[in-house]
Length: 388
View 1: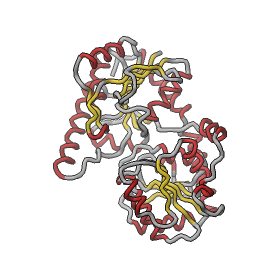
View 2 (view 1 turned 30 degrees about the vertical axis):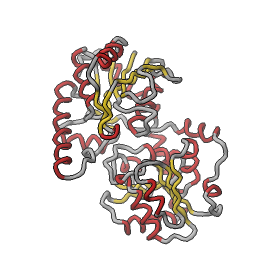
View 3 (view 1 turned 60 degrees about the vertical axis):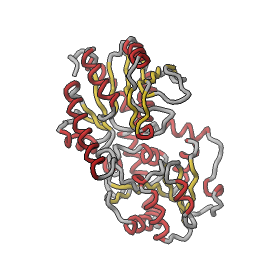
View 4 (view 1 turned 90 degrees about the horizontal axis):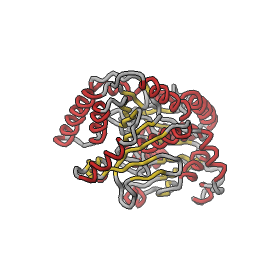
């Protein structure tokens, strides 16, 4: 069986949808099937290649609108030729990621015309962050129009969390079910075991028993990094430190005004990210963005790190109540975040128990093995059905 994944952005671009696509495609190949990934061109990368995992990658020529966040296929001979090569692979089933990319709209229509069964997997729980005023209104209108268009060609929608499924109802879409975002705990342990020793406390010049909070991700306004830094300062936690790992447009400005005890590590190799989860006493994701199911707190849970986050997509499914982890409202104040930091870092017993419960919940429900098995069941069942 050949499964084709449409993902407007893909590795080496780093993000949740990109890694979701990679992890499913990789395990589809491991299960003895073919996996094709259709994505957008990037400078220096070939239009077609097969990676070391056996995934065939096809990159479409695009205009990188919105700084590359909204790639628009570039009409012309190169695009037509590339699409012809893709459909010549005769995919049996297509998974289309996210509801609003132009490549998603194309894929839904093309699959219907070719009678290829397809599903659409949504990854967010809110509108695109376009700001207020006319840009925001225009963005909302476009999203509703895109969803209307998609429904003309495909009626099978899934979410990466139950929260995403509920959000799809905003567009009049009833999701068929979940294809969860996930992690592979055994793979993470293998990476940790093979990594060179790295002590984050020693590298930052901290005492061995310093209580350590961590953030991992893009340094952008929606992720709440500035609020986290201000809350850490307001909490005034002796014997504690905050490490922020990641890059983004806010990095230079926040690093320049970081208070004592706050360290900006910049972009960090993945094994060291996992070591940070493993060594930290608290993982903080104070996001205000409409996340679908953030990979970072799945990774943190797999590595045994207790979690402080906001009520966002998937958080309530992993952290069922406060005994699994702390959740703040998305409209939290800095003082509320500071109070939560004090409570979490001041109660090691709570942290140990919460980490254990969250990890057990993850092992039971949020692994790539279980999600891939479900995807393959959907694909096999679809082969005998009329296309959506």
